[in-house]
Amino acid sequence: MIRSRTTLAAAAVLLPLSFLAACGGEDEEAGGDANIELTLAHTYTEDQAPHTCGAEVIKEEVEAADLGMTVEIYPASQLGGDADRIASVQSGDVDIDLQGASALSALYEPIGVVDAAYAFEDGPHLVDFFRSEDATQLKEDFQEASDGVRIVGAWSIGARHFTANDPIREPADLDGVRMRFPGSPQYLLNAKALGARATEVAYEELYLALQQGTVDGQENPLSNIDSSNLDEVQDYLSLSSHAQNSNLIVVGGVYDDLSSEQQEALDAAVQTAVDQVPGCVEEAEQEILDAYASGDSIEVVDVDIDAFREQTDAWFRDNLEGDSLAVYEAIRNSAP
Image (cartoon, rainbow, N blue to C red; front, side, top):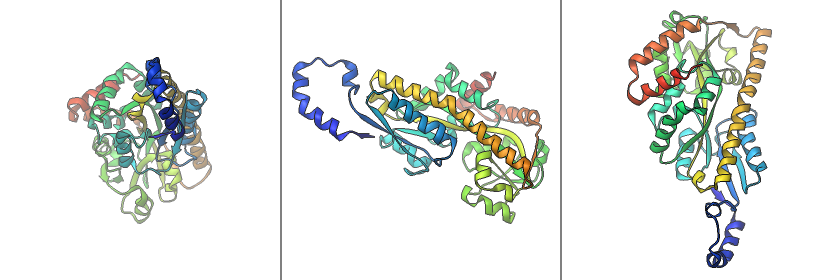
């Protein structure tokens, strides 16, 4: 984290007077009057919702509070990939980060369950869960396992859907289909629960793999499907909504350096962004679906979601255990 050199220099000059006066309150000692530049990093481009309606809103709200805090945003993995950035949050080199739950599972495995297939009913369910007491234990366990990194909010950047050269309408349609899934442990568990034959391909190589027939299909949120032009190499988009693509807003040790007023302002800024991101995502996704409907590149088909949901729920309850099962049950029990 970066601190204002001017403020630090002034503090050094005034230190003897402050020491003699010995009248500073606890909030001042905690940094209430210090100018603090918070570093916020993420992997998204500057035209995607997590940046425009998420990171930028956090910055605007924090600075509008006028409590001596500014936010510098580093988008598009400028400060490294997921693993590098979360390590930087732990070390204090990055203050705030937007991370998927599956990436954070490297620090605390059970949090990956947030990305489990059909764990959440929809995006609002994910938001409500992390705002409720149902998520308290998960947040506390993650903070302990990560040496002080705390989760201050969460949103979904869209549901994940299948694309393939044949429509995927029910679980049986996945039989024999070589479906690309990300290589993280939770996504591979999702493949098993859904009844899919998982094939690992790097995201950067996915278009070519589909074009050459190395894999038959894949799953991603609409924003990724569109930005990678996967409609050019796939015939069907099946609206399975089988997982919410999570973003967890995490803050490192700098949080404890803030005054109580600064902490409240940061928390409020995050919650304002959490309120705005879903609408931005929905608007962007509708534009994509409208474009597909008016063109002839890919056919959009509906899915028997209830059949998939029943299958995955039974699979996870039979195969998850310990804290991972507890997280899954807490999520499902919080369903509206």
